[in-house]
Structures are given as C-alpha cells and as structure tokens.
Image 1: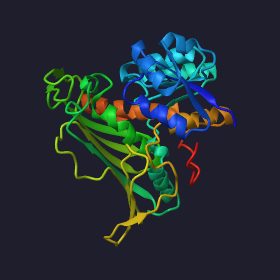
Image 2: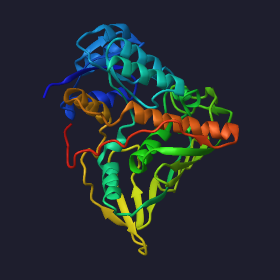
Image 3: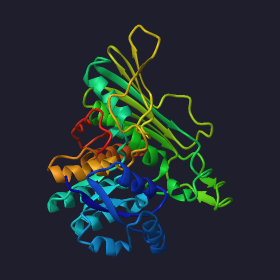
Image 4: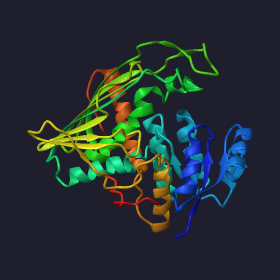
Length: 364
C-alpha cells in the first residue's frame, strides 16, 4: 500500500504526538512537512523530526502534500481548513471542528464541491476502550440502551498550561475543550442526537494564571465555564452531560456510563484510547472487568488522520468524519443556545455511525 504525504500546520504542544505516532504507528500516512505562523518554531520542529519547515503559504503550495493536519487554535480552525481545501488538499483538524455552525457548514460544502475529504478529532473513540464498548452494546451485553451519563469536572487550565487564555475565549470553555471527546463517544455508542436542553454559567468572570511563564496575569472569561446538558438520542436513549472548569478538586463521578435494559456499561475516559471497561448485569452489584477486544489502547492520537489517509487510498468512508464532527459541534452549540434562550434545541444535523475498527489491529 502507498502512503499519503501530510503536512502539519500548527507546531504547538499537541503536534509532538502527531509527529511521533506518524513515524511509529501509521503505515498509510507520512508526515513530510510542518508550518507555523512562527516560522522559527516550525523550523525547530522540522529539524527535530527530519521534515521540511515551511511558512503556511509554502506548505499549502507544495504539490507533494496531499493532506493537511490542522493543529492551530480553535478560532482559526475553519479558516485554515478552507485554505487547505482551496489549495486542493484533504484536511484533518483538531477539535473542535469549528467555532460556529456556519463556518463548519462552509468547510463541509467546499470539501464536497472539490471532492476532498475533511476529518476531525477527537479520534479517541477509535481506540481499544470505546471500540470494545461499542462491540459490547452491538452484541447485546446490556440489552437496549436506555440512558447515559457523562462527567468532566476540573478546575480549569490556568494552573498548569503555559498559554491558557484561549480556553476562556470563543471556541474555548469546558464544553468546547473536552465536550468533543464525550459527545463523540456518546454518538459513536448510541447514535445521533435529536433534541437538547442546556444550562450554562460563567462562575468566575476573571481568572489568574498560576502556571509559568505567565504567572500572575489575569484572564477575562468570555465563555461559560460550567455547562450541563440533557441529550435525547434518535434511538430513544436519554443522556446527561456536565462539563466544568469550576471544580478545583476534580470529580469522583464516572466518566461515562451507559444504562441498558439488561445491565450497565462503564466506559473508560474518552480523552484516552484504552482504559478499563467494566460491565454489571442487572441484579448483580459487582462489576466485571472486560478484556479489550480492539487494539490502539496507548496514546494513539492521530489515528483519525491515519484512517483518513487509508480511506483516501482505498476509496472508502473515513471514520472521524466532518459529518460526525459537525453533529458534535452542533450539539455543543445547541447546549449553549438552549441555556441562553430558555428552550429546547432541536438538532438539524444527523450523522451515520462510524464503522467499527478492525478487532486486534495494532498498526494502521
């Protein structure tokens, strides 16, 4: 099988794992270049990984590059996606897919017009943990799914992140930061969402950075930092999700649980690829740990881009698709809209369930 040659735009913290996994795990994808608004940062990253260091314009103009991996900050995700598509490149973007519905729709429409693929993180649902849970549900281990809960509670990122400001600007907040992992997992497990009810608040209008190198600087909070939603799925299941940057001690609640007519499934942290899967049958108070049926249970970030590269080569649908990303984006915005407007939000989009991953695969 051949390889799809990719270029990374955005050489911040998260780029490192894309470089390392691109070399070690992904047989159909080869990262050959990188770019950043800070050209010196791009050149340093390029030298470290033995690839070309470009300006953004140079990378988009390189005819060798077929796929752009967009790792920029959330508020320019859609802008860079459009630039890549106009340059004739497929594009895979870190979460969130975009900041507004209109931006995301423009990206999807342009990709369709040009016959190009667009994909989006998170791709953690392709890991062994959640794929094992998908198989258990499909095999009837918990009967008919009735309900789900999802919780992500922490104290925010200003205590550890070197540049935490963007987490509190448009495109940030706990739902846009961590909600994609949880909502993508829930959609992969239960199918698309039909109706949403939400409540949200800004608890602390100003925050102080305590990490280095910006210790002592103030952040003006522009987005809700505690967000709760009720999700009604087309399947009939009802989900509850809470994401918060307002709980300094963290959580003691489960990441995700799925409740069925015959039992309960404990789903591992959707921000990871592996984790512990547990099953409890009705009438039994003890959890049974289930061995993972699928591979990719380490830090396999970038597998969505690798699957997309294989899809290009094989002429099939990719799993971490723009349609899935848009559905999740609409749900996140819908929770905020429901809170602001005081009424239910009816989802306008619907997506197909991604194909399950091959069992036992460790290379992709």
